[in-house]
Image 1 (cartoon, rainbow, N blue to C red):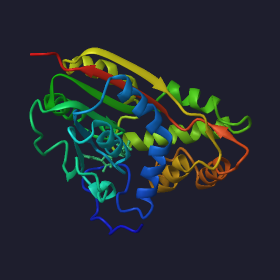
Image 2 (cartoon, helix red, strand yellow; image 1 turned 60 degrees about the vertical axis):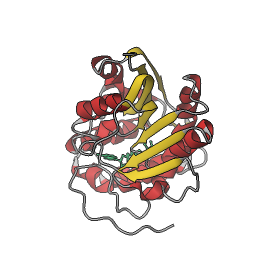
Image 3 (cartoon, rainbow, N blue to C red; image 1 turned 90 degrees about the vertical axis):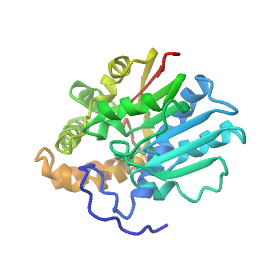
Image 4 (cartoon, rainbow, N blue to C red; image 1 turned 30 degrees about the horizontal axis):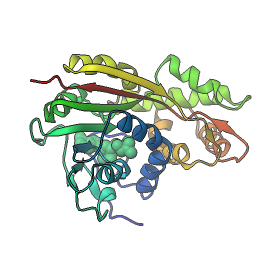
Length: 273
Ligand SMILES: C[S@@+](CC[C@H](N)C(=O)[O-])C[C@H]1O[C@@H](n2cnc3c(N)ncnc32)[C@H](O)[C@@H]1O
């Protein structure tokens, strides 16, 4: 479905929100990572009557899953700087709102669960953003944060799971991704830093899991991500246009398997008062 173009971004976010296929790209991200997210939320006991905040909700699939899970006695607030893609869901207990996590207020000690995926890694003020999310959580409630680790030695680990003969290409591609994130003030290794960040934010019972899908070729997530990031990737000087095209062609082949990104899912509990 086409969406109206957004004004140019002043916040440095690496992804262009006005890109015509951004909704499709966010849906593709959900297709790959929702299973691990909902498994963790289920394991933490999210259920009937919970009040939840889904920050940086993107396409909104986790918000919709939460709304169904908490039922008519629960409530979900889904926020995003650009909430267009999560609107029109038809669920009476789900509110979608435009909200800048770095600037706009949130209710205090209000939510049994606060969840944010692939959000904090993009925010230059990520420690302050995490502090705000913790402050919005009721004492005893859970904070679940998920971010990628595509930094340093992890690049080599990801490249090991690309098809033989293409690992040097994967290595160049991920070094360019890491540099592209850094140039936009994002932290490509924030996933690795999450457990310590949750400790520092005062959470208890901190736990984490790192995971990565092995995708069959023609899965759209990374293809769309590389198309969306073409200009910033080439601007790093670490990959050529020809190499980028080669990588995109490769992961569209039906006969390949590869790891796109490593994700870290981390959780902790706000101590009871
Ligand atoms: C990579 S997407 C991830 C979307 C979703 N959390 C998911 O994992 O499917 C990051 C989202 O964060 C939003 N975002 C970026 N900066 C934000 C801010 N300061 N406040 C709220 N949302 C923000 C973007 O608009 C985008 O929808």
